[in-house]
Length: 234
Image (cartoon, rainbow, N blue to C red; front, side, top):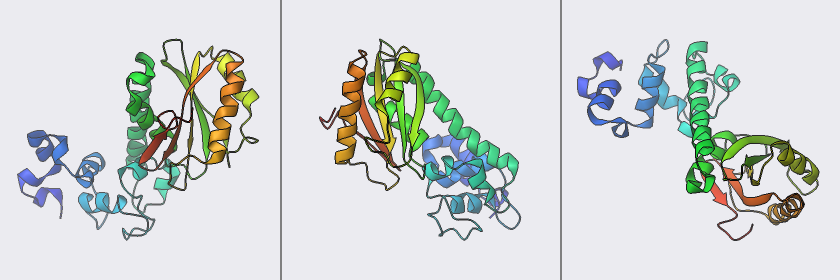
């Protein structure tokens, strides 16, 4: 049903203004961003199908499995959705980038561990939807504020595929006083493996030689994140 045919209090924009964004479903919020549907499909139906689990939405391309999956989709991923033009694709990608930059700004302005959940959310926005493993490092200043984040290694992560010398080199380059290590598990589980534990200890020892502390190693997956420090593993 077109939005104009809905009762005024059921239209997403009017509903948001009257009751606040928390009153809207994911599909309604997405419909506000998309603004219009495509030929033969209203904007609410399009939004709902984009949020379906892969293969469930009846799209020419699979659904993206919720807001997190959709907003972590690349512009190329979105090209596969029939009728989704460049303007709508650009808007969806821009929303994720704005969220990343907002969180980065927050972490640059205050001590990282004053808001541990923000660190996890920031890493989830960057890493959780990637189909391959990525090892990243958050470099921190003496007040534990974020200097920058770098993705250093890709592929299957083991002690031999993550080079301590490169991590030390980048820490010195940024004049970092501390780091937070991070990587994703595309499998969906955030439980650390024995290899994850060994890698953490190897990097902790290497960075200690140049007086850089490892504060945490965070593992992220779709919809979840685990702090190895909170588990007593750092």
